Image (tube, rainbow, N blue to C red):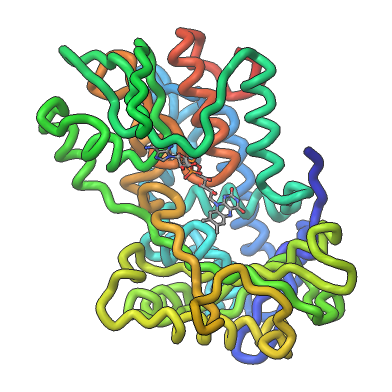
Amino acid sequence: MSVGSLRSVYAVELEGERIVLPGEREAHLAALADVGTDDACSIAALFDTYDQGYREILAVPISLRVRDLLRMPMKTPLLFAKRKATLAKVVDAHIRDPKVRALHTALWPYIGLPTSQMAFLPYGAMMASYVGEGAFYCRGGFQTLADAIADGLTRHGGELLLGTKASKVGVSDRRVTGVELETGQWIEAATVISEGDVRDTFDELIDAQEVPKRYLRKLRRQTPSMSACLLHLGTDLDAPSLVEAQITIVAPYSSEESYGRSVRGSIGGVSVTVPTLTDPGRAPAGEHTVVVSAAVPIECGERPGWDDRKVADEMLAMAERALPGLSNHVTFAANVDHSGDLQPRYLGPIYGWAVEPKQAAAYRLPHETPFVGLWLCGHWTQPAGGIWSVVASGIQAARLVLDRSVHGGLMPLAL
Ligand SMILES: Cc1cc2nc3c(=O)[nH]c(=O)nc-3n(C[C@H](O)[C@H](O)[C@H](O)COP(=O)(O)OP(=O)(O)OC[C@H]3O[C@@H](n4cnc5c(N)ncnc54)[C@H](O)[C@@H]3O)c2cc1C
């Protein structure tokens, strides 16, 4: 697997004006300071806060004991002080100009909540890594990452059963006993790690009578994250001459307005990416791949009155503002209905639980379950959603299963 770094991190199409935010820190801060009335030092202080949060996340033990919690105010003071903060609370203390706020928080769909509801830390960590380290993409598509992990598993003697659903997790006396596959095959196991939808694990795969009521009540109190709907397209437009950044956000001024529109049943904004800018081999010569995505409520596809065709049209119309001429230059669409009309693809909760302060970081579901030998990992659990975090989550779960130390940081990866 190789990675290609991107040029400018993102651009925002805000009411007819295109503003490009570079990945290099000083240039990024200057671009933000240029468009509004905020003092550049105040914006820089916000990014310093993000950097500190990012450094502290990397230093925090992957499994917290009581004494780690007691030491948090000294060892990771920012994580401790801001553990219940929303992004709006932190950003508003540094940025006053509404246009600068809108630009800075335009990537809110990548965390999946408007700034007044989103935990501060995930957005801060994303910004600290985008602006400074840069954004990265797996050359060949994200499948190459999954393939690399699968390759590691088989090289170490693991067996991978693709396309085979687990239909039951067996438990007895609060211990896991094995897994039944949809083929009817029973695999006896003293250890099972579940990384699918945690609600399915405890509502469908395990007999609900066996699950402690307190645990079920806890799960039912949690709120799932938003869904995304996607259009995967090919185009013969000259994309490199039309977009300046790998991500172009087309949205109204504020995350609240954009979120409100999508909750009310229309498209609040879109993110447009052109993976072939980084990885030209992914499309035939002279063409580009385009991904248009929008944050939508999880139940949207089944909502009465929800109209897939209207949604696809709205998404395409917004994507036109990033790539003028796109609708007349679509050479390929991954999803179309029987009459050839574009169909959006819905993904379900894209980050597991919604990334609210009360469901983020240490407040997220732990890997341990009420059953001996049954562990959880993935984006429903600690530390968070997103590729990096679910890899970390898998490593944490593996260390717990192998009874290796979980009280240091994540690095080095060696078990
Ligand atoms: C459009 C989109 C763009 C994104 N972009 C980014 C990005 O740029 N950067 C980033 O960091 N994150 C991104 N994310 C988020 C990131 O992809 C997720 O947080 C992450 O993939 C979650 O990983 P996971 O392993 O927890 O869950 P999943 O990737 O959902 O994997 C769970 C797996 O379990 C399988 N499964 C479920 N139930 C069963 C069963 N009963 N039996 C057998 N198998 C089962 C599923 O088929 C699936 O393969 C994006 C998400 C979306 C939707």
